Length: 168
Image (cartoon, rainbow, N blue to C red; front, top):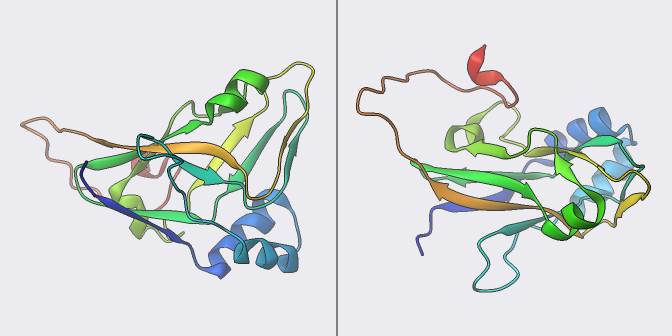
């Protein structure tokens, strides 16, 4: 296995800004949550996925969506990408999904103005069960994957942001 990335917490200011904006909670509550953020980890030596942990208790009624600032950024070596997926148990039990189906975290996202803050928009796909994810519990997983480019590739754009920033 090749080592090609490092997880870090975003700054407390970045996390608080994102959580207040996305979840509408107080700055004080966001700061308390920031202190308890755990970096993603693999559960076993054979696991491909790194579990990302909910920074706060999340409650989603059936069919509802929420954007979850994870408080995490990833410094990724060139030629690699971090792919995000729902934890399989939550997918099976609640039909939980990422609203963009698969999160793609490129290596240059780390240098964005938002510090490369990984935010996951999730939906409870269940028709009758409320999804509750306790603070500190895994809810998505990330897998690092190498990628290639075409022989005639001449991309020279500079990223600044997430969702749709490369097409602006």
